[in-house]
Image 1 (cartoon, helix red, strand yellow):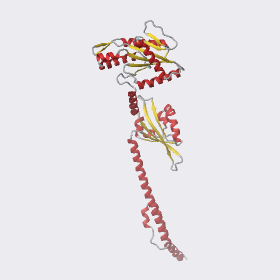
Image 2: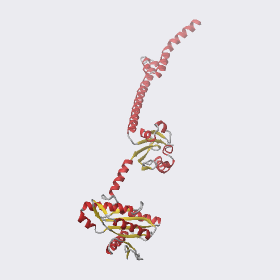
Image 3: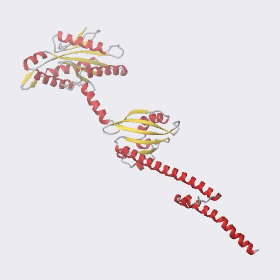
Length: 384
């Protein structure tokens, strides 16, 4: 019986040896794909069929693993390339998750805030930009972006000196099925220089090339805003038209270059006669306009007009030539609720100016339908 048992054990070992070899090869192939070459695929029995099936599965797995590794490498290269591009552009580029926390920021953020990307990631815009700016300029737009809306807006940072301006875009990031917002891409371009150039260009379009005062376009805008302010504040504003008497004689006698210098001198004197909040414009060759905002009454207007007449009557020394050129002033008051349009107010002031010149020049006339202004010096009267 012992001999028979030993023989049966040897037979079993011999019969199970191929299966054990298959199990060992399968186990090794699980961690080392090239080890599948040891599989007994050449056998014609069930063990060979099982080995061939397993080898086929391992081949497919190897192909798919290789494809995944290639795809992963390609994705890593693409991500690195995107990061490199993002880090080499001057715009602020970031990605926020649904909790409004920074997941990615480019080097422009590091330069802007003096912090490393690792320090910024995990913070929120409230942490980075401050509570006031977040509440007023970021949160309303970010809320729209998180709801799935593409948002573009201009943001001003008045706390900087000088103030900074950005063109900001919030682009929602969608899930793979494009039905759920999973975050927001942030793009912010510094447009401070562009804004400054636009303001300079705008300033040139509303400034007189000779005197630097407002030109007719700038005057029209300022007059319209002054009248609107008068309506909202309930205060009187006044328009004064100032015309140089006998300026043509100056040009004919001394030449236009001297005349231009005289205009510059008188423009400076006019500016010194009014407050910083008031406006002075050159609206014609030798005609100026003064916009007085929020005046207390007619007496305040008279003081300004008298100051203008006195200042412009002082002789000017230009290129060793002493030139005296008096001025006539016409004014019109705009009171809240009187229904004046801009053109109507200008026509009233122009009517008063014509009356001042007709009355002898070098004087002030205010358009007033209700009363005549008395004058001891005959420098003031009214256009009725």
